[in-house]
Length: 159
Image 1: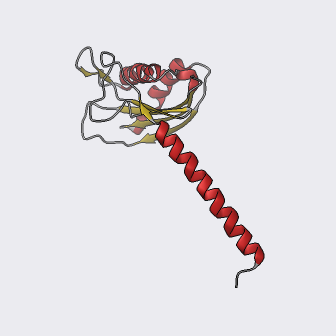
Image 2: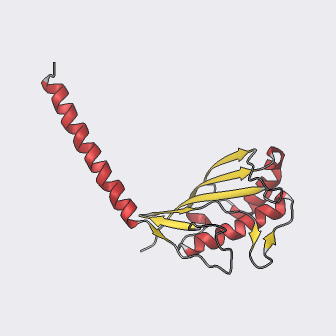
């Protein structure tokens, strides 16, 4: 049997759900692919390197492909982390943000033993900025020349 409290709770939940849905629809409507500097590092597939949705910028997974050389960085974690950060910086810059705006990074590593080498470059590139981070070891892209992939979420203080 529905009591007055249950009916009020249902009405409130329905209203909150509709409000959240409208906010999500507005954010999705604002999601605009960011044009990427193809000379720096173009996407290697049919996707955007970065997308701005509302106040957030989401990068795709960025790997250590050097577009100028047309090849991957050397097959060591330090070189690949440097190149992946160069490519990520280019994607973020094209979206109007930088490393200081990043609030979350996800780092995918092929070899779990590469965490230390990646951390050395990571700390050098980010300085004192410490966004939240998840490191996922054991990623396998089906290629021996990809050791790392990084994606980011940044807050855009643009407009």
